[in-house]
Image 1 (cartoon, rainbow, N blue to C red):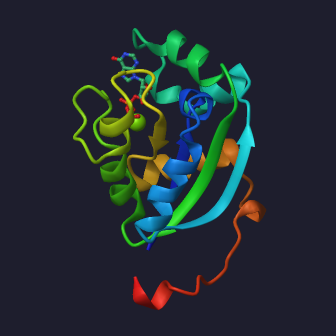
Image 2: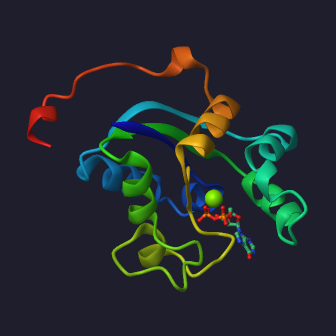
Length: 147
Ligand code: IDP
Ligand code: MG
């Protein structure tokens, strides 16, 4: 079991894909243990994306991620980090496989609908940018023993 940080990015909220992205996570058998809608200020966005500081797309990425509301989630399950990365598809929507979130709904390399932590270290760094520990809710889902 591990946890990952998932963000439904501003383009996905604007294009009304939030529900479909949540559904894909749920129907895969992953459990949402924290969730909220927020609009990031630049300082918070810069913390979230600090590993990209200095890259050519960094300023544009900060503009994009602060441009409208996002939905942030902590998602838990067996191998959740890798499973969510697979559900998302490649960074560039134009190259992402059909069947993935990005492959089905995006052709953008920047506006690619969704974020998922790429490792446990990334989750541990990203999670406190958006959540307090107290916001994670521990509960059993009725289908858990079947997943
Ligand atoms: P990831 O979201 O698939 O992990 P990263 O390489 O970590 O991809 O990049 C973080 C985010 O920065 C991407 O999801 C995308 O929004 C944006 N991004 C990545 N590469 C580019 C690029 O070459 N041009 C513009 N934006 C980019
Ligand atoms: Mg990344």
